[in-house]
Image (tube, rainbow, N blue to C red; front, side):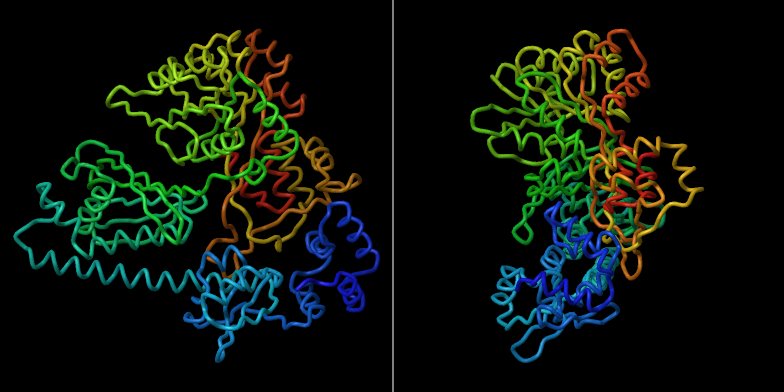
Length: 588
C-alpha cells in the first residue's frame, strides 16, 4: 500500500493542522533532501506523529490504532517474535477466527507481513499506528519475558537449594575437587539458570554479563547501551555451580580459582551466531565472571551507520586508499574502536589484497582475512606475531592494540616498508595519540612519515524518538559556551545543512529522552561520536618542533577537525542522542 502524496497534502491542509506556508516549505525541503514531506513536517515539529499517521491511515483507507497503555494478550503478541517486531515496527495485537490484526509504522512492508502470514497461518490485516504505540507494545514483550525469567530463576534456585540440602555432607563454599565441580556444573538447575542468564542477556541486547559474588549474595548485572543494570540477586550458594558451568562451556580449568582465566564459547540462536568471551577473576568472596557477548553478524556495518559523516568520513576514505601508512583508532575500553577497525577492514577486503590481523581476542571472524590470536602465555605476543606476519607477504595489517614500545616500533616499520597498518591505542583524544607514541619510543620523524589519520571516539546512547523537542535558554547557552565554541558549532551545523543558513542558537532544537512507559529510559542502541585528525604538513611541522598536544589539537581544529564534543552536539541537534548524554560521555 503506497500513500498518495497529493491526497495526503490535501487532507493535511483541510484538517488545518499545518499552515499552507509550513506545508510548502516542507515540500521544498523534502525535494532537496529526497525525503517524504510528511517526514520533514514531523522532524521540524510542524505536526505530531499521531496526527500524521492518522492522516496517512485516512488516505490509505485503513484503520489507525493506538496501543499506548493497551494490554495485549501475550499469546497474540508472541505470534510475532520480539526481534522481528522490534526491527520491523510491527505488533500483533488482536486475533479473531482466522484473522490477525497487526499494527505497523510502514504498511507497505509486504515481505514481513508475508512472513508472519506463513508463520501463523492467519490472514494478516494491516493497521497503521505510531511510534509511541510500538514502544508501549515492545515493553510488554520485555515484561512478559522478565516474569518468565524470574519464574525460571526462582524455580531453579529453589531446586538447587534442595539438592544442596540432600547432600549436606558436602559444603558448597568449601574446596571441591575437579570431579565434584564438574558434577555441580552439570546439575539441571545450574544448567537452566546459566542458559536463562545468557538467553535474556541476548534478548535485552546486553554487551556484557557481570556475575559478582558478595558476602551474602550473588549479583548478576547486564551492561546495556554502555550502562550497567542489576538483572537479579541470587543466593550466594549458587555461585560455585554457575561459575563451574560457565567454565565448562568455555573450556577453562574447573579447579583453578587462584589465577585469572580467559576462554570463549559459541552458540546459535534464531539463526544468529553469537560468541561469548569469558573472563574469570579471583576476588575476596569468590570468582567474579564477566561474559562479553559478540554477535558474529555484526560485521557488514558501514562507517556512516556507525556515526561518521562529512569531512571526517572523507578523511577516513582518503586514508584507506593509501597503500602504505598507519590509521589509528583511539579511545577507552568499550568505545567501539575495534568495531571501527573491522568496518574499515570490511571496506578494504577485496580479492586482490592479502589482509592479516594479530588480535587479542579475535572478536569477529571475517572471511578471506587471516586472523591470529595473541597468546602471551606461550610467547605469542603482539610484537612476535607482528614480526611473523611481516614474513607472510601481507598488503594490509591490523594490530589489535599498540601496547608497548616493541609493538609500536614494529608497526611503524611495517607502515614504512609498504604496508597499510590499522591499529588502536589507548588515549583520550586524537591529538593525544601523538605524545603517547613518542613516549613509547617512536621517533617524531618516523611518526610524521607513517601516521595518516587518527580517529578518537566514544559511544553515546541513541534516542528512541524525537518527541521531547526543546530549545536552550540563554543561561543554558552560556553554560554550554564554557565548554565549546558556539559560533564554530553553529557554522558546522549550517555547513552540513542540519539547520538553515539564517538560524541562530535560539532556533536550534535539542531532544530529551521520552521515558514514559519504557524501561530503556528513552534510549536504545548506541552511535559513535568522533574526531578525525589528518596528518597535514602544518601538523607534521608542529610534531617535529616538539609542540604540545593542545597546540596540535588547535591546529587540527583550524584545518577542519570537529572535536568529539562538537560532533556530539551535531548529533544531538539531529535527534540521534540527547545533549545530556553527550556531555556525560565526553566528560567521563
